Length: 182
Image (tube, rainbow, N blue to C red; front, side):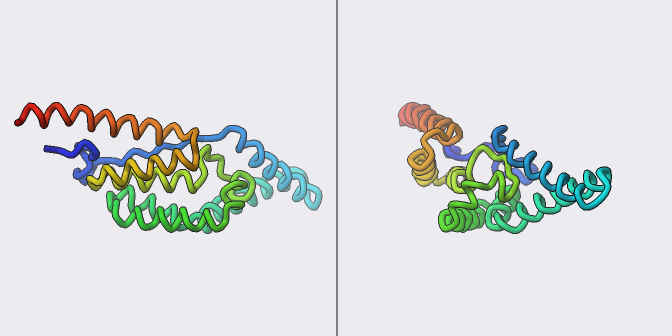
């Protein structure tokens, strides 16, 4: 019998793990401000058309560079997650959680520092990703613990709320099936 915590296609090499991206539209405002600032400053020292192109290029370089350098453990976890190497991904997400716990200011101001408009913090994403990975390797108890931990730290996390409801629903529907088998 399949575990209620695993996806029926999780073992398929062609299955794609779900990735949720939530955008905070308020976090886009600092990004636009940084872009406008770069264009303005560069335009002061060059022609306006050159300033626009160079400012946009500087914004892209900074944005891509900061997202590449700062959340390295998170990106490694996502790479492992996509390859369905869940146990290794759990380790990378723990590393990401620990890094952003030590550097809370990076996570809090990521919209301005990393130009990341994510609605979830990296710590929040790490906890949910750890929980999901545990669910994929059949450790539903640990998955529930991490979703609960995510809710304890981030009470408005809809992803953790929905996942817990799904797990609990799967557990409830699995109970009658096992009782019928007796």
